Length: 112
Image 1 (cartoon, one colour):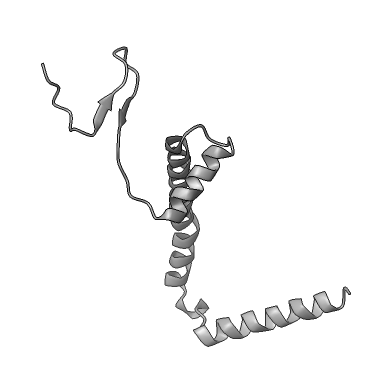
Image 2 (image 1 turned 135 degrees about the vertical axis):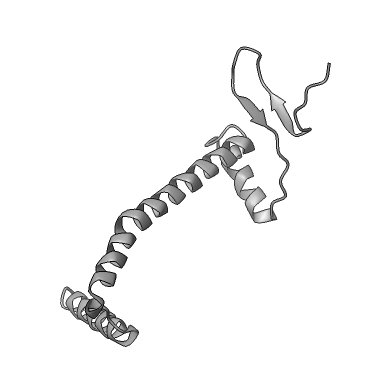
């Protein structure tokens, strides 16, 4: 009796253990080399572990961006929408950044 899973799908264990989808991906040489170097160094046992760790990190980064958008950026947008007079032009923002940068350079040059 054949199962109805796609060809790339492999089920491990019959006791309720997690199913694993087996995938084939193409990578540029620098990515493949990086994965290989991590495995050779002993940091990971296999290329699959490297990819899983990378996907976990990507998921964490995406979640952090979503939190920032929901909690910080949305609040800033709402505050600006409530009081548009708070808005600065791009020229004003850059002038403030240049002044701040100049102040930091001066304070660092006084340390030496």
